[in-house]
Length: 136
Image (tube, rainbow, N blue to C red; front, side, top):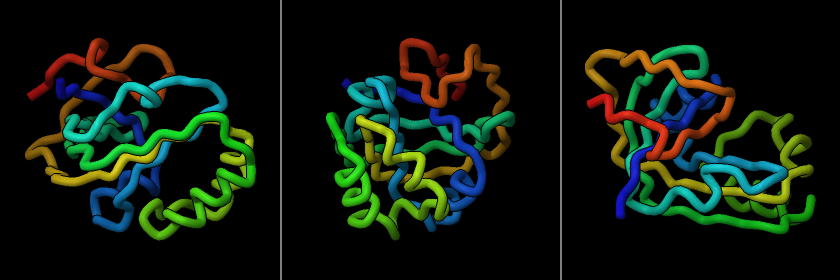
């Protein structure tokens, strides 16, 4: 079953995705939280600017999930997928503390004709389909 998700993204990452410079979205966490275990290939992902509107949609073309990661394993993931992740230099230091990772290959990126307002509740960076209304 294909699902719908809302990815809240900070800059410069959202701009990099929309420009085609970042083709893999990554979410690293210390605990098992969405999108870990919630997203699959084919799912629709709405891309929302943190503190702003929903600007685009994308399809998850591939998803890889990792658990029980060590700092060295995080470093290996970042080294393997670095160009596609297109992360800031200081990202690795924070990610080394994480034990879970979800890598999502983004395809079929479509800019919305008009940005769509969406007020989320809470501070989560990912909202999966049971919490997200269909805005289009």
